[in-house]
Every structure is written in structure tokens, then in C-alpha cells.
Length: 173
Image: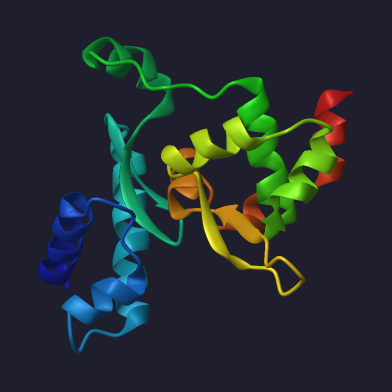
């Protein structure tokens, strides 16, 4: 089992995006998903106990190595280019998409009370939002939803991990 755990660790490390149990099972043919899940849980525990600079985290339907959040100030010093932030308008647009998806632009505009074309274009460019289809009504407007990168950026396992509207209201108060 230690060899399989080492292989799983190497796969997660080498993956460019969070690696799902299903994908690991495709690579490690003949290995039960329960064994893979057990190895991932054991690796997660080992990294937590070690209290090193990185940890294994379940995110966006898979597993990924991440730096500890309390060490972010040091990692930022290493990075030469600053990550492009989101304007308040883009964050509001993204929130509407996240909570109402799939959603058409007209509904986003109506909810926000302004034209969201610029914000929407920026979210598509940053790959935080995507076109998920067309609504079956006259004119066939485009439907928008969030992406896997959205889950990664906001450290969410899936959309059910979004705070509820009640939780957001409590935070505001």
C-alpha cells in the first residue's frame, strides 16, 4: 500500500489541476476507489501532522497540493507578477452566476440593475465563467455558469460548498 500511496502522491503533485479519485483509478487500474480514498486521507493527515509549507486539499472535485494560507505573504514575495484581481462589479456578476446558474445575461443585468457585458467578458477571459448552453426560448440566449477554475480559486469542493444566502446575511450583520 505504501507504494500505491507514493504513486498517488506523485500523480497529485504532477497534475496541473485537482486530480479526482476517478482519474487516479483510471491510471492505477485494478485499484479500488476506497483504497485510493484511504490513501488520500492518509496523505492529507500526514501533511497536516507535518505542519510543513504545503498540504493536500480536496478542491473542485479532486485533490491538489496547496501552500498553507498563513504562508501566503511569503509566497506573494516570490511571485513577480501580481494576480489580476476582480473588480467589485465582476465579483457581483460572478456571485449572480454562481448562485443562479445556468443564467442568461438579461437575468444577470436585471439582478444587478446594470449592463454586465464588460464584467461578463472579463470573467470569461479569466475562465471563471463559461458558456454552458442556450436557453430554449425565442432568441436562444446564451446560458452562463461557473467553471472548475472558479472552484479552485475560491477553494470549493463543489457548488454546494457555497455559503447559503442566510450565512452571507449573518456575515454582513
